Length: 500
Length: 134
Image 1 (cartoon, each protein chain N blue to C red):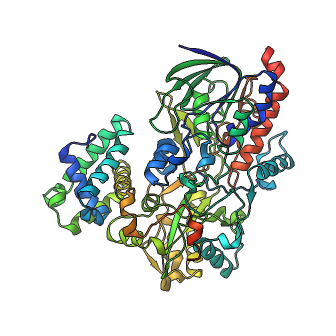
Image 2: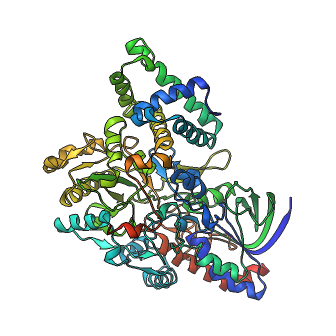
Image 3: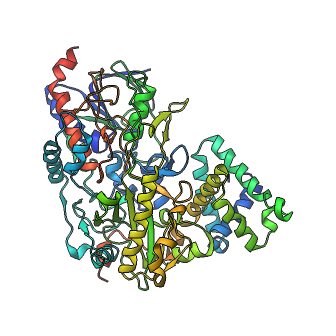
């Protein structure tokens, strides 16, 4: 088995790994060898075709269809050079003060995260799109919220040169999304960081990683030849997303000494509703996710967001089949969509484990409180649709496939709580958090406030698995802020870690 | 299809027409694409999952025997839909989850084809902003 030696290995190239790579890149000038091992491929620009099934296969774990153990939820996480920053919609929010206060991590202050988030917001060109670039799908959401007297806020997004393809979740074909694949990783590579793609880190031993390189048949071939490698490193930073990072550390045998490893997973459970209008809308063109409503975040623990998904994703998220389902799909140009997200609690037994082959198993139960929140969010979303002029609405927990506008006074009866049952509606997650949570106590946390794994001074975590609880907002800027802290700790202790 | 026998693939086509009625109107090229997409998705899954999918098709095919004495493909359209609605909300988790997976596969096979986008009015364009105020 070929050997390689690095000073620092980073596992994963998304919001966490890409940020760590860039912030540690200056060490290359001092002679350090820094390597990023990314499981996914680096796609060529011409491979960003916008074809849904093809791009899902190229860019996501399990083509975007990873299931929880009970199959009640579908999880989406990016697996590509740039990780999930290639496939999210670019919404960039700073984590609220109240959330960090609830996290209660000694040594972690909101002001520090806020400052670092602001830095990456500048670096990623985060800004508000002008009103001339809001499509009907977004405008109707705002109109509906305002007619109901609810707050509708605009999402700042990380784009440069957005042409409104609306294909953000399939990799921006206009190269406009400023994810780590466009910003942090190229800067890191220019400074001497090596990025080895198509490289899965199988296990982490004592300052070494076992890596398998396998080219998938798309994207650029890995700079390393296919095969198995033993990669020695003085420092290892794990940033493979909450599920994969937890799984990697578990199959590396760290579960015995860290009882909280894999636990306290939060997923921001979400589902889609559709409203049909009489007229054609600009919905699949323009940026798809420009607004949100947090009117009920504190009271009812849910958010509403604009969204517009592609045909297959839309189809599988609608309930039912047959003539009615086809009828709504044929109304695609007249369809408005809203994504609802529930804030889920961090429970010890919502966790990542690994099976006999070391593959992650996500054992997650939706609580009654979360189902209540999803129920209320569906009613709220339906109200927004009707307030915006929709003639009928499809809600996943609806008693009937369509709810017509003239029955909107009876939403409580037409979207009953009893229909909100796991496995009976399509619930998804694109915000995977927890599993390697920060904290002071090794009995209940995996890392300290700087991402250093308890009891393993050369091992760090730098992704959303650090979150002790749900971030309540899109996690990416927060991941980048935390990743910078991790990079600082690595850099500060590099001499000491190199010599030990 | 490599991942299903000819018989099971044929039955899948029958089921697909209930899930997405437009599948029936696909031409040969469209049906070929449908099966290729589903086949690729099945081949990406583990062998045990592929076997489970095949078993599920068999169960759905012969389940109506219990009530109507005939296999699924010989039921009236109305009864076929009744069977599938029962599976959609089936109290037995394994069957329900299996049907939801099958439903997803059929949607992928149909709506995952760029060639059907025109029929539902989906016309993405990389310069989408140009169409915002058209």
